[in-house]
Length: 254
Image 1 (tube, one colour):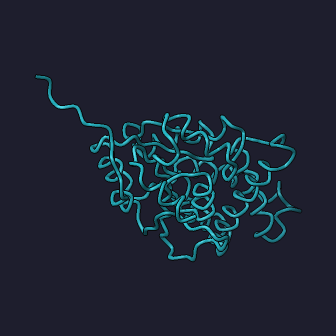
Image 2 (spheres, helix red, strand yellow):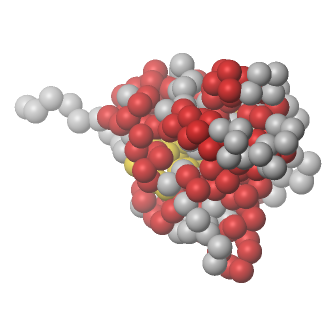
Image 3 (cartoon, rainbow, N blue to C red):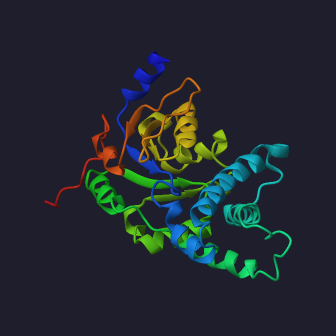
């Protein structure tokens, strides 16, 4: 394992791909609206919604060779409905009368434009200035990512916005991670993959990426015998990755 890690870190980093949900966009920024709609239950609802979203994405990727795949928007909505029925007493038995469908739509509309973490723009600008290829590799479907990127004003700073929808497999499936090298034309070892989700950083490490786990919450990493190549506490830590080397910048014409 150490030899593999050494060989991987000997290559220059030519591109940086970011996970979107939880890494560039704060999935818990819907918490204020959730609390307004469900007083006293907003935080618990947000946590269960996220956990169920991830669980459903893994489930539909592995069952029947992906035959039950559905776009991430649908998975996200299904997870929200489940979370409401689980957290809010009586919701499952009184769905129509309780106006729960309207509340689902409000929360889903909020999810389209999640708050972006404040350091996003400066980090992406710094990478672009160095000639580094930048992009997103996300479970989000193309329409979701398009709205999120535009809402955050990041469109001009990203060379690639890659949705796993093209592979019909969610992360952590290898087919999802394979979309990064396919889009950039680079080896996985030349691509830094950045995620705040430990399961995502772990699977990306297994795939062969130069991984950076951004541990904002100071959590322990997964106990499966593999560590990410790098760990940080902010997206700014990507700028300190060893081997970061973009394409030569073009000087002014002679």
